[in-house]
Image 1 (spheres, one colour):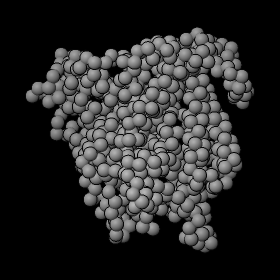
Image 2 (cartoon, rainbow over the protein chains, first blue to last red):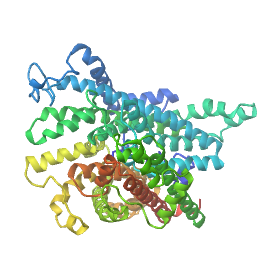
Image 3 (cartoon, each protein chain N blue to C red):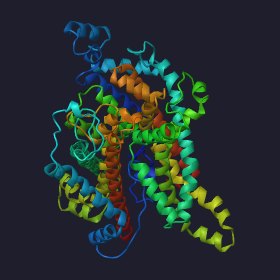
Image 4 (cartoon, each protein chain N blue to C red):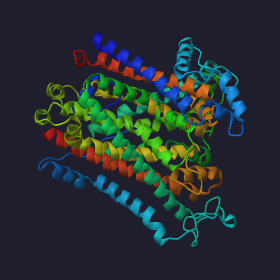
Length: 319
Length: 315
């Protein structure tokens, strides 16, 4: 779905690690964006990134969301713990710019609090997934042979289970809390980085500097950490950006299904799913703010990831 | 080619076994396992113990797993605690309906996305292209249930054109007999796929357009339409085949949400109900079936790719 979601699925030639033209990687956003040329590697990437207006818009939105969620409550105090039953479902007014929700919390303040939760869970899950997936893929790609085959079959097996199905399965045996949520979202997100980094590792392990390091007596672990992983960092960063977007969407979907954190903890998905009870009564302030927040943030991360990927492809072609 | 196919098939078998192991471990070993999950926190230790002995959960894990695989191979997927039916019967009722939903959504998505992608490629960097790109990004970034709700708000509540609930019915025929009610669920599921497919189609078509044989065809005087239809279309379709195979798990996830939003009586809703009511045989059986379908889908995509693209066969 929205991804929505690496070189997955055992397609032989794609796994060989060559940068094939536009290999579909479900889970990454749609591609697009312009391409430039010239300059040193990182400078070039930054130049492409800076010139891509969509990417700048994306970065702007993300920064705005972070400031809104984390600095907002410093300037705009609302009570997000005690409910105010006398003030439920009030439309927007001067006292409450976005109205109140079904237990009396101020919606604007709740939006900020939800933003904190959504962003923290989304970013942590994506980072965790990328770290684990990168290590898994790097080891598998570098070692090769039976170890590689077994490790990749594990990835394939978990990939074969649709993400939401897997999470529902886990949720039926685990009690849900924020750390568990981060863990669970990361558990479905680590697969794409694993596949991608494995492909990179396979192509990188034949490079001269790796062979030189081996010849000089470098240990395998050191080579994986010092040579393979940093050279795959471009792919990893692109994938992580898309994973953040997917994680936020997944969190929203989980909250909609009732598997999110319990009140007074909240996230945008919970706000949305609670507000949907009032869809027939025209209480738009319960529904649209949270929904728009989710879409804006996810679009922003998709823009950024897309621009990074375009910049990376340029660099690949220049090699 | 045959060696490639055999290798892929063996990999698929290994993956399916891997899935059964993973699902088995999750359900049987993690805290809150079958006994406690089903009987609830109020049940006494004696009741839990009785349940465990009666259902054979106290035997060594390997024995349990062996029994599970044996049952699977004989087509016995277990007996639902909740619905009082065999899991196979439940799947027989619900799987075809979900397949219809997902199949229709894919069909609609492909019919719209392929021409859209080609049009975007031919008119790249024009206003049409940017508008379509923007719309794609937005559609791709929406949570599925949000999209579904917006559609309901627009088409069912705002303009009273379409019913907000999906067709209810036990059989596929019953479901298909109310096409009006199918429109919104299929549209929800399809819109996100359209966004992704059209973007990949666009990139693939752009790459094909700069190939030499297209230039030759133009130089030889072939009309643009013929070039598009005969050369561009076929050669750009290749990544889409793989993409379809690979996006099957994501689409099934999306179907779970869509079915929940529109109350469509399919696999997704069955799975969700089972998850919340701790109906482990249903969870186990459905996951294995879904995973097998996914593996088959991606295997089919690979085989199709090898069939369609002769360049692949010699690797």
